[in-house]
Length: 347
Image 1 (spheres, rainbow, N blue to C red):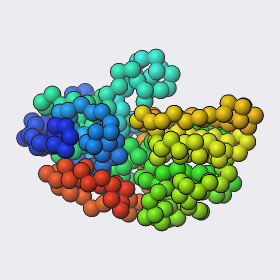
Image 2 (cartoon, one colour):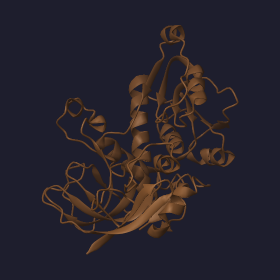
Image 3 (tube, rainbow, N blue to C red):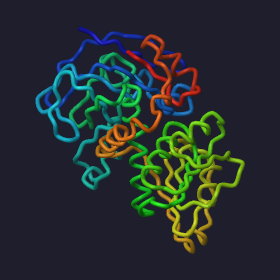
Image 4 (tube, helix red, strand yellow):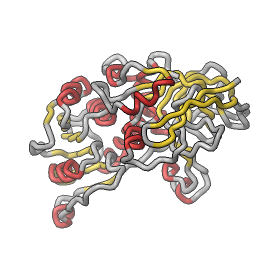
């Protein structure tokens, strides 16, 4: 039996290849991919804005069914994985033993492997643009509840879990969000998710900022109480969450903070212009600026729980476009984001 994989060869090039299905070893899991969503980082890789190994099998947001599991293969909650389980998985496989892992920073493990980000050497099933993925020991895996359609569950492995980590960082620095003013820059998949999480956390005011009018119209359905564009001065905020990666948005978010305010950066994942910081204002106003990149395994579990809790109150399905077949992966990554923040591939 074989799997089909779409191998990225550089630029806009993809080649479909067949790979023998492996027998999972201890702690490993073989999953048939039901749906993979297209993260912005993959769009940046294909467009040349972000470096990536070519050849490689891209894709790191997915949902699928367990078709084989080695001895000791378990979910984040420690539950044994069995055939037919519908699951989502993380991005980073950590060693569990380096100084960063021991310090609780497994997301930044010194020997980390990232699904959809590794070189393809001829037989690996380690990217989601494929019919199957082979998840190694230590990969965070969470069962997907029945009430979550594939299009809602798939982005949890990157977008939703990352936002869960961002919100945890914001609350750790700023305290509970009940009654607070929250500014969200970037109304893509992550920004909209952050609005919904902030609303659930009791924020009194949630301002969405984006250049795209269609996305700003979506923002109200995810908890935004007001919307604006980057050329408008943002309102004063207790917490600013930055997902666009634009230097201007970073500066604007910092400028908007009230005394004791917190700015969490998550979108600045590529080199860009420097942003001026007034140290005196930071000191006198007790400001905090922090960054979040990747997430810990418990954030993936938190993401799935949050999606299940809000499945009936937020239009999550509207954020993912109708899928294309695996053979059309190049078109899903070449077109860029459309009206829906996420394109998708159904292998």
